[in-house]
Length: 179
Image (tube, helix red, strand yellow):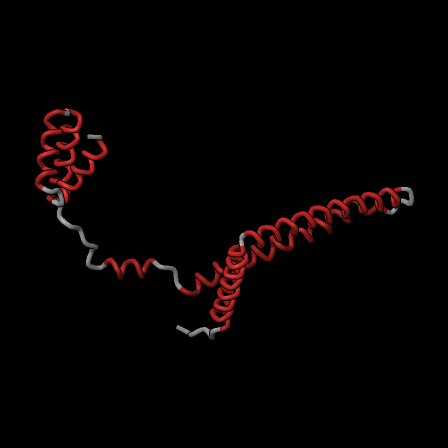
């Protein structure tokens, strides 16, 4: 008999689900196999410890203390507002970088000799971007054809975003109570 089967029999014996013939097989194997006998003794010791350990319950005032530690509504609104501001700034960062690049490299572009090279460079960049965009859209189309569930998940995620946006708007638009 394999040791995995013996181990399963040990677990069944601890749970009280082992048949009489199973008990006989287990005992005969434990007499013949010292490593399994040591494992059985360890499992019995652990089982006795678990059965003797008293069940613990939460403290009497656990709920009140936990609720008292939760942040108040005003604090949560400040945190949510800060997150939205960070997201807004992260979206505005590319615009700031473009403004910096224009102010930094603007004088170089105004030279007449650099304009044809700039136009050629922009044309090559746009060709590369259109090729990459075409490849991405083609790949996305193939994924959607092969795995239509992906489109479902995207729609569900968009719905969740719109739902939480509406909930946030309701939280912000509620009149504040003076306490």
